[in-house]
Length: 252
Image (cartoon, rainbow, N blue to C red; front, side):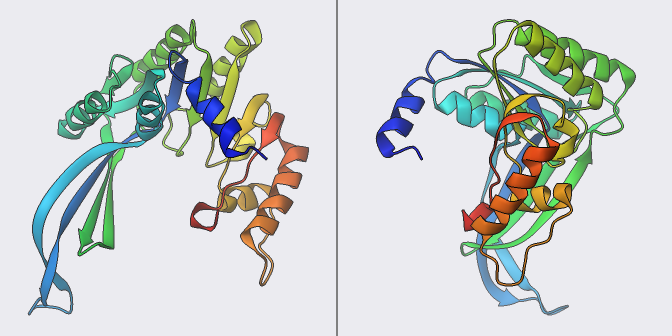
């Protein structure tokens, strides 16, 4: 296990690193306010909005985090030619990430998650957007963008939320590119078995995704770490990857 010193040394190497992030970019929006009464027409709180914020989400959040560590980031993702897409570009710019590689398809709607927070309490989330039904032209543009952005990348991060950017063709192409010029590849997948032949450096699904992929169930009273260990061991038999890391969200 890495100690604080070794982890710090890893972080120190990020400045100047060229990172390619491929995946599903999301615009995260937050409405924050105060709940001071219950609505007359139904038993729901009335929220007086005090503020709003927008931030990169999904693969765009991964790109923003890498940029914050000092890496030079290229984000290959898909957005609609819409207001949400423009807001996503603005949020990326504030995070120091260029939208040069962000492909826009007029037939898609930018992925968007709106969270309502009252007095620090997360109340509800609205999801909207559609990128699965992209045009053949957009698919071709994504493949060309990823191929071009890969040219001198030190690291590839696949941030797969199941919204279509990491298609079978994209995964296969990234594998071919890495065979020609090996580099580190980290995968955060919703469906780990889609990367069974990707020969990734690290595959890091969350516990629910790992259990689904391995047809395992969490045993009664089982600690998250124990369930994650069982799922990781089974994934090792099913997926070609150097390392498997199963995360458990708030449980560690």
